[in-house]
Length: 389
Image (cartoon, rainbow, N blue to C red; front, side, top):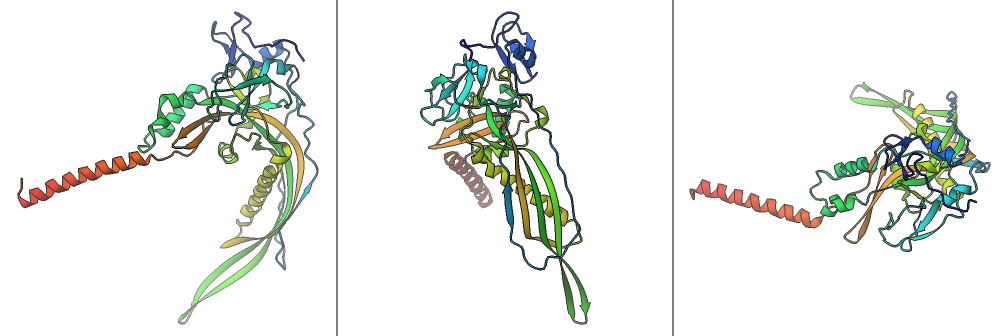
């Protein structure tokens, strides 16, 4: 491990460099020089993992077959998750990074050694304890921020715009300034699903016989078999990030994912993974199994059936490789009326998610004002009719 801390500095003037999401390059604030991340990484001896993943999907369909009885859904799981390609530690890169721990919520974030972290991005606590980076795996991949702080702030303003009953604190400049860009850790799972699916299809025809309308219903047993490979099923590896919130930010464009280098981190924080691969694997398995079933169900509905119902399945789920990546997310936590509201934005696509509250005081104030205006209008109208004016 290196004995001294190394920060990325401008080769021209020696000033600090930060990653500019608009250009995808490192920029010096003093002389305005720009450099490609891999150029600076080579200068500092950063050697990212060379492994890469490709997405492959294979689908086979079998013809319809008879199912004489209802089959129970069966799922068998085979193999072990292969995390052998994930680096065991940060190595020399740890000399350039520090870990910050919030004593209030327990959140852990990573940043450059030169970063002055004064508050926790999760709970807003101003007390942050700095420590050396130890006991954590080094990411393999990273999707750099494409949208900068200005774009994120503007997106949030538009998110709040026009909402008359929103508490003022949510749209205030002091709140918007707390929006932070953080690289969130994700496990990316590769897997394969093989399944035999049974469905019950129905068709119906009607015709008149004298005074009666006769409806004839026919039932069909449908079978679909498929094999699907899934690459990079994402599950967030941070306890600080609600799973449903992170799922709502999808999709991320994996074509822009590159090998990890600390040269992408200047100007941003990085969350520290604290959810294990095994803890996340069930989520990845369920997503793969459900997606495979939806493919089979969609294909079965293409037939001449008025309705199609699941009738049973036998599924084999095979575990594959696991990858560790950092994905770009802007987060904002707002405390109001005794509750905490967390908002997130995809730092690559600009997708913004979160629930905005209603200020009941503003609601009743607005309702009362409108009621008063309507009463005055009604009073004037009545007086006019009665000849009072």
